[in-house]
Image 1 (spheres, rainbow, N blue to C red):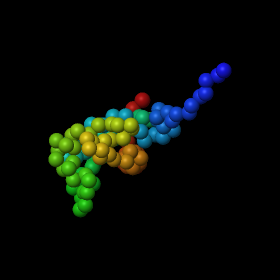
Image 2: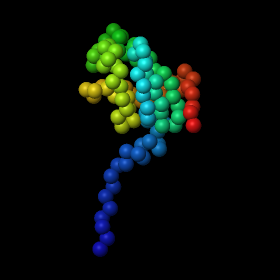
Image 3: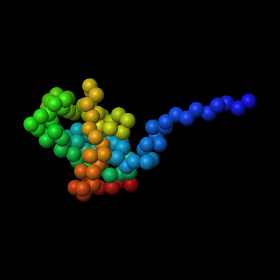
Image 4: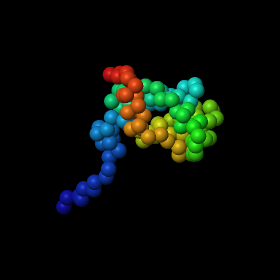
Length: 104
């Protein structure tokens, strides 16, 4: 008798289908981030308007440079301790529109 096959979603499959999966992030001075995406696009994002804007909301704790510097990549998304994250597709679009570098 054959084993039943179960279908589980493969998180790596997402990597192959969308270009905006973040593979590396580095926090920079003045609340900026350097990000690299799975397709090689990389560039700088200025997060200060979001963090210091009129209504920073949940992002207000990131006004502290030490907290902001704790950015890391989790499941292809720029994330901070406490569950804060940024939309990778919007960052990707901004970098492409501003003129990005491709590293291959």
